[in-house]
Structures are given as structure tokens and as C-alpha cells.
Image 1 (tube, rainbow, N blue to C red):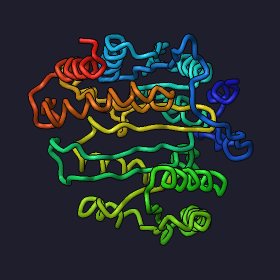
Image 2: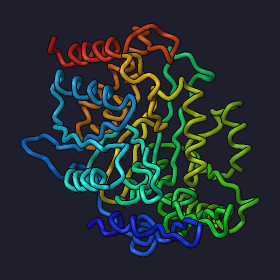
Image 3: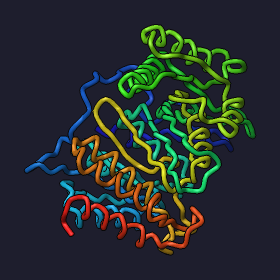
Image 4: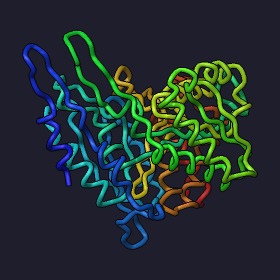
Length: 387
């Protein structure tokens, strides 16, 4: 099962004074040559007595304390999820923890995670976050960015969905030092992965009553790679005549986002551009602490904060904003089919931010993380009549 991961230590070789990473890394061949047969992604595989088993990876920095808040909310409000906690050591020089985490996600089908640091300096140890996405073929990252009325932000009434390719592009990690002091890094764009990403974006727009899809690219410079991505999106748009389609160059897109984000509805883009756009647009509506992200493949789903920040500088201070992680857990509940629990949690978050105006320091407030969480629990109990 983990032949790819176990081979990583053999992918680094010495050639004279130089170190070369060979080009066949991660799960790239599987992604491109053996695309998995899609199946409906809905309920977690482990479902006992109406409850779901979900893998929980706390990650580093503020991740462990935020996961503690998630467990507290779920336990005190009776949400039907049991967490299997898996720790990944950021300093480890082997992939044992990572392999176990992936085994757990394969077993449960669903995961909620914090950002995982990869502190090892060994070139054989790749980013654990990227490895999880590649091993599980989580080809799409979707992030619904919506303003809260009382959260200080650059723009109000923002409502945009960012759809990001999650497994290729610059994140394919295919790089090597060809001669001393010269490193080549390959950006890989494939028609198959671009097509299923574009299809996901248009289907999302269709199912949610959205009227426009915008493809973000740099095809004016990268005429073959981004040109293929853009061509694929254009061809896919012909299958959805009721949804408007346009495209925009990434640098212009960033300027347009900060000046007029309301022109966008659904945005679809390759991997690296998605990382940039996600952080820019989260900054427009209040920062990294409120927006969640969803990672989907044909078989598995992983939920996490949208900007994938570790927040190590504020770890353990009870000042981190728990809303992004709680929004991720609401997304997870929706994915599992627990719509009522999802709605209750989202309503409680909205009431806390917009009615009680209970904000942490990142939103110019004075509330502690635990204050926000306890207030959310109070609202859920009020909604369900359990006070």
C-alpha cells in the first residue's frame, strides 16, 4: 500500500559532490496513469449506531489546542462523531507516522487536520501535507469565502468559492540539481486532472445556483502548461451553457480581488495560484482564523483551516481563533450527512461573531479562544433545547 512512500529514501542519490532527487516521486505516476474510478463521496466508511469514526490529525503549532476545542464542542453538544487521533512528529526522519495516518484515513474515509510541519532537513522527507493529498489523490481543494457582518474586513458581502488543483503543478515536487548551483523544478499540468477539476467547479456552480466560473492562469507566459489548463477549462465550459465562463491572468486576478472581489463567483485554478489566491481572499474577509478548506478525491475527504497556517508563534496562549477549525468541522458534519448538527454549529458561530461580537485578537477583539468556544457551545445548547 505504501510502496511509494517507502521508496522515497531511495530517490536521493549522490553524484560526485552533488545531491540529486530523482524525478519519480510521491504518487505522481498513480495520479496521472491510473486515475481512480469515481464513486459517490458521502458518508464515512466507519458508521456504527448512527455515529461516524473520523481521523483527527492535530498537526503542529495551534493545531493541538484547536483540535481540543473541536472535541470539546462535539462532546458537550452530543454530535455523533468519534475521533481517532493520530499524531505526526514534525521532526521525524522517517515516514512511519505518515503511513499510519494515511492508513487511518483510508479506513475511516474522512479526516480533520491541522497543518503538519515538516522540520526534517532530509531531502527524502517531503511535506507531510502534500504527501497526504497525493497519496489519497485529493485532487481538489474547495474553499467557500464568505464575509461575517461584524468581522472587521476590507470588503463586505464577499461570497466566493475558490476551487484549487491539489496534487500537481509546482506541488508535484519533481525537481533536481542538474549541475552544481542550478536546480530545475518541473511544473506538471495534465489534461485529465485539469478536466476533473474543471468539471468539479462547474458542477459545484450548477448545484449551488452560482452563475459564473472564472479560470485563473498564466497562459500568456506558460503557453503549454497553463495553456493546456485554460484550454481544458474552455472545453469543459461548453458542457454548461447556462453558466457564464471567463478567465483571468493570475497577477491581474490578485489586483482585482483586492479592489473588487464581488465580480467573482466560482474561481478555478492550478495549485500554486490557488495557494496565493486563498490567502489573499481570506485576508479580505478577516484573516486566516475564520475560513475553512475542504479537500476531496474520489474516495476520501480531508477538512482543515483554509489557509493551512501553523500559527506556532501563538501556540499555547489561548488567543488563536478557533472559528476556522470549527467551520472545518461543520463542513465535515455536512459531508457526513449530519446536516442538522452542521446547521446548528454554523448558526452558533455566526451568532458568536455577528451578534455577541466575541472576537479574538486577530479580529481586533479581546476574547480568549476558550471564551469563543464556550459561547458557541452555549448557543448550540440553546438551539437544541439542552440548556
